[in-house]
Length: 96
Image (cartoon, rainbow, N blue to C red; front, side):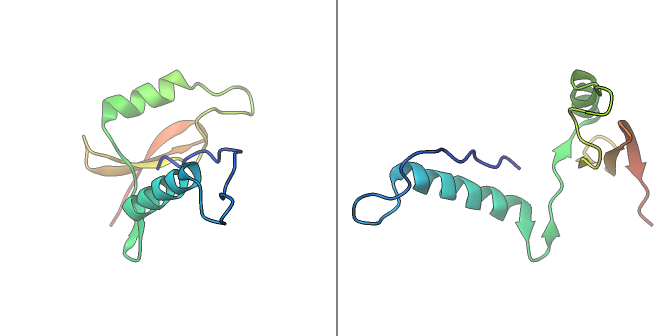
């Protein structure tokens, strides 16, 4: 999910209405939330095996401070499996 940055700018105009920047931020945020969150559940981002390898290779852990956080979870579209990062290692979750 791509959560928009909160721009530190004027949030409302002189009449009390949201500015164009604030409207854009909320529109982007709500669109992302509607894409990935629903009453039916959370949609995990889909990545191929190649993308997962690239993501983890480009962000090696720095002692005690991994750039790709443990607990990151995705759906591997190449293998049709749920996977996640545990102690900086990609693990496959078994669903029975």
